[in-house]
Image 1 (cartoon, rainbow, N blue to C red):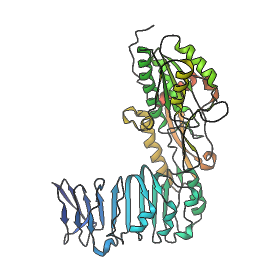
Image 2 (cartoon, rainbow, N blue to C red; image 1 turned 45 degrees about the horizontal axis):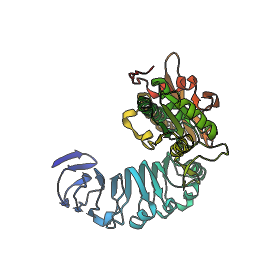
Image 3 (cartoon, one colour; image 1 turned 45 degrees about the vertical axis):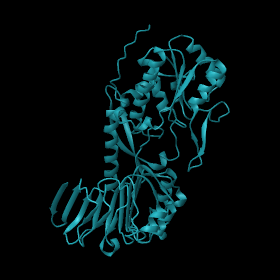
Image 4 (cartoon, one colour; image 1 turned 120 degrees about the vertical axis):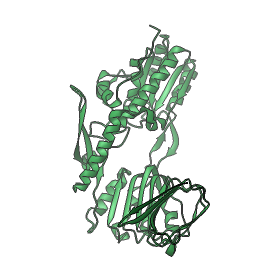
Length: 452
């Protein structure tokens, strides 16, 4: 068992317990004020009179019964990954959670109705029954970061949370952000500052040169497409169709055209900015496949036909009323098989396209930290109603700096992939790679190519 006892005057004593292997722990009579505890295997815990903070050092997979003075009055409980409800602590004062995936505020209020502080950081994640937040009548501090699943209509009005003095929401649904700002910007006694961070790998926010996340997603798309292209050209017996993320903007899918630069495979790329004529698409596929060098077709998940409707979708509608895209690659594959009589297979990495740490671009990682720091410092200076914008220079070498732009210039504006960078409906111009390569990090593999 790893035990670390730290005296921290004047705040008291901190105790950290890892690998304790105990089912029951009794800390009554101790002077511990802050307890950091590994929850694995623990079934029952007794806290001392002075313990005001309990931090779980991992996800509480099975609820541990916590015996605390006054049923948790004045006490804070911190979770990781998941908030576990503790009916034995109805007077709990504070809940916080990192890497949260999902939380139902209705259930939270059912078991912990007297919260004064609620601070939640998503993985990102989703909040259910957000409108129930107004039931926390003693709430003074409320923070969310990277949490979604709610609308502006569910944001409580100031009079519904009379004790609220700290209100911080970052990386949330755009409509909800605008509503929160409108409702709370004139609230007396409330320190509300809104700083937007352009965090979307889709790269579809206006004004800013690019968004953190795009460089890494583009690198993943380029390398994954190149590896598929090598497979397709090494054994050119079928057409490979790769579907990448991008409902309305084709920035990430455009990066997959890098496969044509890294390999000798034929590559056709289709973005949502230009409606697809399926007959012409099939004719181009047949012609390119006939060259005998293998063929990779890359498509954005949101590509549409000439009628403006998606070639495929999941049939599911999200919380904003949008149909969730998906299935474009399989649709194109089915058409190739049925109408051209060629072998074909569909590939879809899905969420891997934005979560694969080994593909992180060093430039992207550095700028992500820089944007976050700039946003926090701006808020501390008293700035509000702005978004951090990245200003980039690419010659003679790449460099970037940060500035603030009014949210009003960015909200509800979607930056599409430039039409002039799309060649003949299925090719990507050099201008895009001049723009994107510095963000993707360079150092691409030098593949051995035998076929000329």
